[in-house]
Length: 446
Image (tube, rainbow, N blue to C red; front, side, top):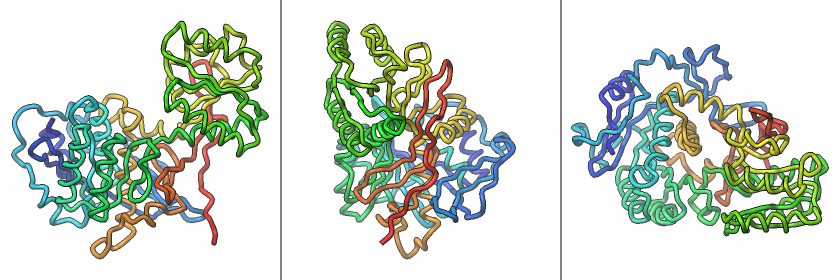
């Protein structure tokens, strides 16, 4: 795939942005981003101004990223058109080794732009392009490289990114590809902001910009305990992930004065699931059930629980962000259930803007790509990067954190992400916020 459209190219250049396509299916994009530490203003309409906070969150001072950009009149051609050209090689292809020689700093985003996850990557790359238009800084260049979704492809991509002068590696997407990139980046003294949710790859020079299950479980168990639901059962899939969910739940329960009174696992086989839920429901030694499932699996599990007299409000259903989909509204037994998720207002603003740009909904991971670009722009604006790399471990792990398209987040020293999560309740045709996400982190003192 070659990301190059004449209309998009001309529109971007009108705003000081240049798109170039690498030969051999490698992608590179020169972008301009913006940073300002002025007080936040709220636009009256999106077409007149887009405001995106992605900055250090501290009290009383907040450093904020802004762009007042007339989206509807920006002259970017038709952003809803496909940006995939399967035809001729681009005539303006640029040598990676020469990328950004006239600019101050390069960052590289590594994605499986070809292969089974090309559509996901396309949405993520579009979100990054949206960040390009919304946050401008002439000192930053963003280069895209295709991993093909394989470890060897990731190694090839990171080597080209390093040769292109990248000061930060953003991505890749999968655990195996992050492992492949980690050592190469370390040898070049570069940090990696990866999209994997596998905690095992975090640490040293790898920081996970993702949605970690551990924290989602922690947040919902905390909220349930605060509301007096102290005896909790756990239903999780028969898998390594399911076993981890139970471990996370036990750890969270110990922190918040609750108890995991029963843990059960379900399979994908309907007959086995029927028997498993019957066994799990026997005796009902719980006042809440944490159900790690989504979509049709969640609806089926809840119907089986209800059939076995595990019903709300006597037993509160609890969940994670897997619940955050309109398809569950059709299951009346789920109404009144609680689940943890990222800040829905912040995410809603991101989704609305993405839909205006591209006439389609973004994939769940697209917001991560947007935040990664905005984070890179923020940190690049805070130091004289002609003399030093702005993407140090200390900079990435600033205790004050950052505001992104899914709310507040920060990286810990061990490379994990900490988010300010909300708690939502399932309504008839909506999700209602019943537990607010935090708007600031506690800053440790010496």
